[in-house]
Length: 434
Image (tube, rainbow, N blue to C red; front, side, top):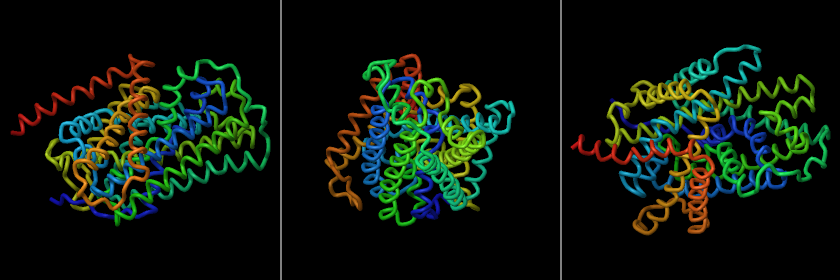
């Protein structure tokens, strides 16, 4: 039974995977949520820019880690090498049980909502979500080369569609500069910080996912840094531009009254046909993001099983396609389970952001630890701006964790409990394995 994955992903495939992971439900769902929290368009754009900068800082650190350890597993591998087995086990435990299943299910849930809107149907969103997860898992199990080619096509459609919103907004000149005037803020800036940045960071999330398939990237020492840096910068530019058009076209008061801003913008630009077109775009966008989320997520479970920290059968590779088929299908089962029992986008996305940023910060700690303890390791790419960049990223991750707990303890503490439970589970696993 083969245990090595095939290197089939090039620069364009990796870039498509990364951009596809980032551009999904968030850019369509979160702008209205953010508008409900603050009264300043200038601050809204500043939050979007800050999210891009934080993601870029994370990408810079991950580029160093990804080229040092160019094997599949991404964040799990970095935590294992930088901070040791217990921390990496707790991450893998949390990631497998709740974090990645919630992410894939949350994106697929938005897909289901907009399929119903587009077709005028009333199918159960949970059923549509599960069908899509199972279908896309089958696509990925059939081969990463096929999966990355699908990602190229879907990502191209998404980027062109978002560029169309910006281009039409500027060309038709139907907006108003008066919309950029500040209005009465529902909350103080400090009180709005946690929910706004959580929404922004959900929208940017995915910047690290391409590192999870490092073991399948051609020439990883050369390709990974380019993919991470170019992909993050491109998405930041797209997001800031799209939100500027949203604000130009829709006053904050109206934005707060809707759930999805893009259809309202397109209706004002092109009428009902525009609203229908953007709904179809959201369907395509979330289809692509679900696809790439499924592709990358199973590689972490695969890597942990290959290291003997999970059931060995999860590390099996398909002899025909060279993909981690068992991990893919286990992930699909868990994604369907959380979609069915949690049932809403908000609950799924909230749990993901909270747990994931704890480990993002810890991985950046690993960059510093490895620089101190293992200066001899080969580093084909060194984090630019070290140590300021990783330190700022660590501080931001810690602040987000604390602010999120203070803002929504009833929502965040249960997920923290699952994470903490991974520590005794690790020592129990080691005892049983011995």
